[in-house]
Image (cartoon, rainbow, N blue to C red; front, side):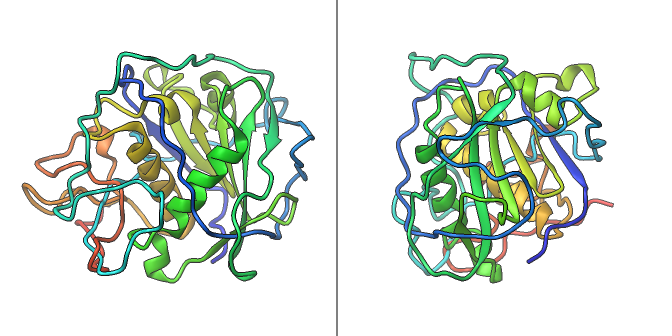
Length: 288
């Protein structure tokens, strides 16, 4: 599936979310790839694209679009090590974590380290790579494992036929970047005052994940940070696949992964996955 133009999806995530040091997700997915972009190897450092140039404009998604929380009930087993969601569509956890808060720098050098190949899998599929800003305090290999597990989860977009394989070079057609808040603001061209330091976004073939949101999750999301990461990935990849925003289908039902849950659940319950464990798409009315 090709990337959708240069549309940008901002995800304005609430401030203080309870910190939780997240467990590693150990998926079994890809290795190699192809796509444009600057090549990043584990030892290389690449400057932030756009920090010295023109940032992409923000689109209308002003809420935390990063992780669509749609846990599903799909009859197929979940990828080992991937974030869990109960069959009723609710996410596990309360969104409030332990009292131990990870160190989260607000800014960084604007250079990124590319994760080495961390998963094995079929040679086919959209090539993706994972990059982490230097000094962010997140292990690129661990971030790659978690993202690969989300992409390969049967509650995710693989139910729609999407397949992904990890690569480390410029052949990547989709790049996930975990960046500090200030670097995220530059890459996402954040201008709205209440969004500064709080958003994730997708711009072209890049999904930019705010380090604060990666580490702490969002106070609007009823689940631990590791589950919220799935919402970020699923929501932004959904946009990359051409999906638009959706809203709550009814009280007590799972919020669609494509819903801007930061704007309020409107009676729905937090959910990070586009499909349930039965393989049914967790949809809602389209947002004009």
